[in-house]
Every structure is written in C-alpha cells, then in structure tokens.
Image 1 (tube, protein in one colour):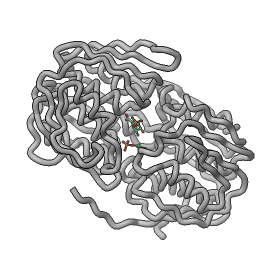
Image 2 (image 1 turned 90 degrees about the vertical axis):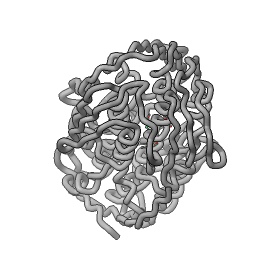
Image 3 (image 1 turned 135 degrees about the vertical axis):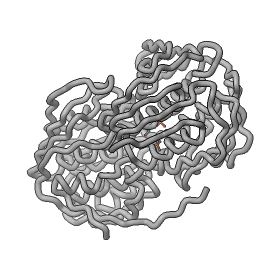
Length: 446
Ligand SMILES: O=C(O)C1=C[C@@H](OP(=O)(O)O)[C@@H](O)[C@H](O)C1
Ligand SMILES: C=C(OP(=O)(O)O)C(=O)O
C-alpha cells in the first residue's frame, strides 16, 4: 500500500515558564491491546480513554476486517463486539498498519494462531522494520509466511495455523512486541505455551490476559527476566478496559517543563508501571524536581500526578539494563541531556536502530544540527550538555518521537528548532501541539 502525505514542517520557539495542568492521551500500548482483546472476546468489550491516534485507529480497522464490530461511542469511548478466539473471519482486504510496529506485530500473532490468511502492510517506515523477530516464533507454532518483501519485511502474507503448536520460546531481543505476538498466537493453541525473556519488558499483555480471565502465570527468571506460562483456548470474558495516560507521551511536557526556566506544571494520571518508568528514574538521578502526588489505581495500573518544576540537570550514566523500561524515551532524554551540566552516557541502545527511524542516527544528527556536542560509540549515545544553540532543522524520517523531542528542544534553546515534518505526531499524540500551547509553548507551522 503506498502512503504519501504532505509534510508539515513545524518550529518550536523559546518559551517563558510553562504553567498549567494537563492530561496526556491514553497509553498507546494498552490501546492497541484493548482493541485486540475486544476482537478475541465473544461479547462486548467497553474501552474508556482509548488513544485515538493513527496507530491505534489502524489496529481498530484491522479488527473490523477480522470480524469485530468496532464502534466509537464518545471521546475515547469505544465498544468492540468480538468474534472470540478461534472464530476470526478471513479478512477481505489488506491489513494496513500505517506507521505502527506494535499493531502489525501483535496482529501477526493473532493471525498466526488462526486458520486464516492475511496480508500485512504499512507505510515507508514500517516497510523498513524487521519482522523476522516475530515471524520466527510464529513459524515454529505452525504459521507460514506465504509472501514477503526482502529480509522478512512488509508487505507480507501470513497463513495462520488452525491448531497452533504450543512452544517454549526464549525471546532473542528484549521486545514486548515479540513476547505479545507469541502469547496472542498461543491463545488459540490446544496446549500450554511458555515465553521466557531475559530482560523484563512492558507487561500489559500479561496483565490484560489475566483481566480477561485467561490462565496465565508470570514468574521471575534469572536476574532481570520473566517466565510467562499461558494455557491455550481459554474462554475470555468481556471486561471493561480503562486506559491510563501514556507515560511515553507525558515525557514531552515533562522534559519541556524541566528545561524551560520558570516552569511549574502538573501532568495528571500518568501510568507508573515500573516497566515504563526508566525515564523518570533517570531524570530524578539528573536532579529533576518531580513530585508524585495522588498515586492511585486506574484500570489495573498504578497512576500518579506529576508536578514538574524547572530544574538544573546534571549528566548521568544510564545503564543498559534500564533501556527496556524507557525504550521510546531516549530521544527526549537526549534533549534533556543537552541542557544538563556535564556528560550523559546512554548505554545499550541497539534497539533504537529499528524503530520508526534509526533513532540513534536521527537523534545524533538532530543534536549536531543544533550545536550540541554528541557522539555515538558502539550502541551508546554520549551527550555533552550545556547551553543549546538551536537553530537547526531536524530530519524526522517519519518518526513522531523525533519530531516531538526536537520541538521540545526549541522551547529552551537560544534559537528556535524546526522539524521537517510534524504529521507523524498524530500516530501517538494527536493533541501534542494544542496541549503544549495550553502550557504556554509556541509550536507553529514554519
Ligand atoms: O509492546 C508494545 O506496545 C511496545 C513495545 C516496544 O517495542 P519493542 O517490542 O520492539 O521493544 C515499544 O518500542 C513500542 O512503542 C510499544
Ligand atoms: C516504537 C514505537 O512504536 P511502534 O513500534 O509501535 O511503531 C514508538 O511509539 O516509539
């Protein structure tokens, strides 16, 4: 499927202190999964606080093509009438996931576990991303890759197995998408599947499996890992999903408030699942003023309000084993590090090379374009902070997080920072520009 769009360049201007209270949209990871659980549950699943971003909407369309009735009943309020496990329909069209790695890979797991054939496609960014990491275990479970672009890439056609073979699978990369694809395929398997991860990654699929009544066990494995055991063919029961605010989106106003002098903001109800809080941990080590108030549980996840005031940051060493808990936050951490006193070293970033863009290269290039002294050494990114000149135009390579990170940089640099295209921001945070404006930040078309 060819996607072309008109790039919309944006520019972030130097701001006076940011002020106000905001709530960022629902978590993207949980939103994708909520729709997929709706599809796999017979009966009606109600969702509150769904992220209405392009990535998640693409997953909703795929669920419709696979037989669900997906209905928007209010802002963020959705209803999914599912077919149930084992009863998906063969899709009449291509499953087009646009820019979304998560939607495409999770749905490959769903399709692999059913006796149907589906074609998966996406935009120019998604077509470059590696899919073998999910296809390898799914083929072990009996699925067949009928057609694929070179290197196991999209577009590809996948024929699922009507009786997927239960497996014991150790994920070779720290990836919640790979883990989740195997678990979704295993849902229609006549036996018990085990997934082992050496390093724990976000556990939303596991939590939601339990929430919908599946028989799942999660145990510690080794020093940082987990072993997940799932019994196939459960009868999932419809259960309401309340989606908490996305910590990966909260990261942008959070870093903005730290680096813009005079800022004092509150970001409400941010999910603080410990497998998602690596950025906050790191910023606290850097000397950030972040207060956690009103901690409570929402939709089975712990959430908290974050009060953030402008801070004098200092450079730190970020250990590689923290990377999975902040994998999408490194671009904006690199921006925070640019304003910190001293050097920040972020270790073990190889996975950044296979996101919507090669984020290691894109972040490095953006820093250099704005006068920040930075190097890549192996899989590490090193940023020497201080006053940031700005004035650069950053190539975003169809990557929403690169766009938002450098617009945030422009709010505190000496000269404004431009990005060549802001359209991809709509994939994960469609209200980013107005939300930042409500805090007093000027992000304008250029
Ligand atoms: O499972 C998920 O919802 C996600 C997992 C991560 O990807 P990987 O599994 O490739 O690490 C993350 O980068 C992505 O934004 C969302
Ligand atoms: C990596 C990301 O998403 P995905 O893999 O779903 O495209 C992201 O949102 O930063």
